Image 1: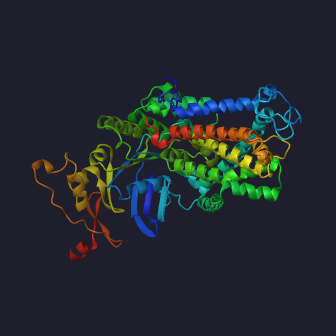
Image 2 (image 1 turned 90 degrees about the vertical axis):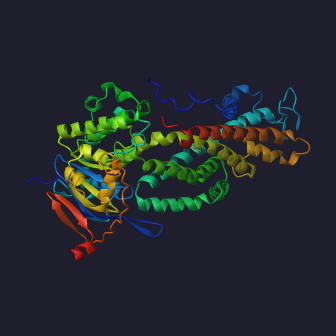
Length: 282
Length: 297
């Protein structure tokens, strides 16, 4: 009877959506991680094949206007897209989470001030914030990542605050306060383990939106710069050949869709699983 | 004369919600002697829980004074107050939400010792095991999580946690009302035993006269944010003076006259104002007298 974390998987049957989502995500992540050993050509090498060649056995996804192998470029691009998404989500969640916790535990005045600021920022679409920030910081992969991270901060601050404020009112937190535990330890030892699960779920959901933002910024020429093979950047460069060589758009487009889909599926089903309203209390 | 363990002097508390001001407490004065159990009884909304929360420092009164061991704590600095209020611990009503689902019970109990300055977790572990034994649980339950326990066991754990910082005053806010009746008696007996051994003072909040009668030395009856009657438990039960106290007693089959088949007559409960005075009706037994009665008599 030392099974301490029985909560999720064991008792309920896993929903199909999480299996599909996880399966997809595993394939996508594996492809990105193993890309260097999977790809037949250097993704930057021009004239690896004929220009604008249709998908064939030699070039699975075809080639682009410079004769670069698209299969190699899409797989390598996945490394960039996933990397940007992961970096942005982790830093956005860390900063936003910290702000949310401070808002929930640092007293009424701080709470009111931070919440108003978060509300104002949250009212802008995060892509718009990212766009404005990149316009200000200048294009490039680091700036785009930073901009996406910052654009996620209001969302994560809001979510973390909501979760923390709900915990704050529970008697177990009050009991810990009465025992004289200072606020830092209270948050770290008592509150965080109770909201961590939900934050991870929110991170998964934010991941797909970060990937979409990254692709969007690169498509607009504000993120990853050509000739680097980021998905959005490949889309942008293939735009002119949509009639002659649609595969330049199709493959990175499908990659973006599948990635977003897989992480949304995972995130949504995880959210349902950890939803406190569905949790039995025994 | 030794000072009372806990004294609340003319405590008022108002909440404002959406522009409306709600008077939760309108001038409550109470004191709990050393080793004494004071029951606070009243219906929901009478302010009894707010009173308990003020006594342990979870809420701050709008006005009035709070004394612990005769020492005024409400005008202390925040740090000093927190240290002083560590002597006041609380047992909550809901044994489910009052335990952290993600920490082992040993860790939760031990946190109180850690916060009190014990930094050696081996020492903390052995004290925690002693505490578990004290509340009637096996020592090795420390490594288990709350979801493995029943409501009664959880409430025992909550009692152990409240004892960990070495309190002198324990506020118990309806500690048995969420439990099965058969378990209630066990928990009440445990509370009584612990009070004797540790010379604790209890502020015992309840809506159940039977429970209060079993455990308390004195009782204060609260109605609409005021104490309307207080006195030794036997005197109040045998000779209730305030109409509201009589209503409460009528609601308890064991004490009431309902067995005779007579329906309780609905009475108009007096609305008390700030000018009303307490009238003594017996040894330590006082009742709040509405001012028009006072004028008539």
